Amino acid sequence: MRAQLGDQLVVESPATGVTRRDGEIVGLHHEDGTPPYDVRWSDTDEVTLVFPGPDAHIHHIEHGPGSTHEPSRTRTDRAGAEPHGTVPGRQPNPGDIGRRVATERARRGLTREETARRAGMAPEYLAYLEEQPADPTIASLVRLADALGTTVVALRGGGIDLPPGRGQALLHPQLVDLDRDECRALLSTNGVGRVSVLTPDGPAVVPVNYEVIDDAIAFRTVPASVPAAAVGSDVAFEVDHVDTAISQGWSVLVVGPAREVTDPDEVRRLAGRAHTEPWPGGERGMWVSIRPTRITGRRITPSEG
Image 1: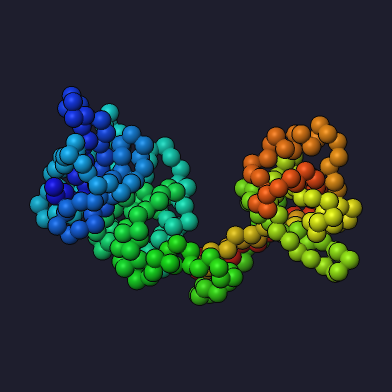
Image 2: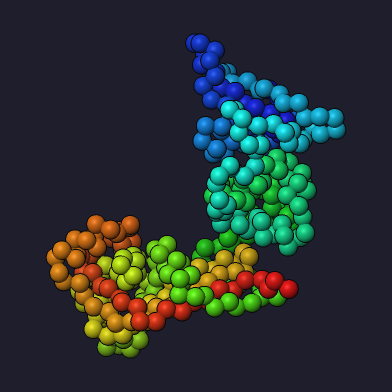
């Protein structure tokens, strides 16, 4: 079995010969076109690594003269869908890897077509990877890293055990103040933030899983813990995201009074609207709510000049 980029992998029912599934081959792992393949399935638009079995065959697509590794640009999906690339009607929503690939490609002044050619993959797949939260195989990442002159570790975001900020600084960075709505939008993604409190042993900053419910920051803890020391005083709460691989990030700071939530109905409501369980585990039934009186934020990005 041999294929080219843009060919169709068809999986048939061994009993009836009816097509059960089909998809576009968007990545090759061997220069001679032998399996495995990265396949973008037409029914889910997801890309997976496929080792074709005996019930699969290749439907070769006419690529045109001199275009052995370039899928046809005019081919459409079934039922008259748009050509492959960005999913029709879907707004770009890149994952971390796709965002790093796009940034590195822009740094080097490469087009998608040139990058895809260097990496041995379809330009449509590269567009999909840069614009949607795709999960490329390690082989695809290796080829992309080589095409972009970087490393798989960098495309994945660097070492997670290293503190952020050790990456190369941007050539022309700019700090942009975020307005209140932007800060609220970033806060509402939920996750892990840091609360600053005063304890008998001095100031402390501790991470907590938090929720944004009714414009307030809410987190669960246990009595007599460090986070519980926030109750009854004005505290600072901070959340951020830093991508060392591309030297960009943002931070949001909330200041306001913290109180313990004691009303049983309010506690049940908070628990019912929570997205995650606290990472430390165990019974953490004490809810602390921070009502913001001040919200500020900044983002570091490349300058437009």
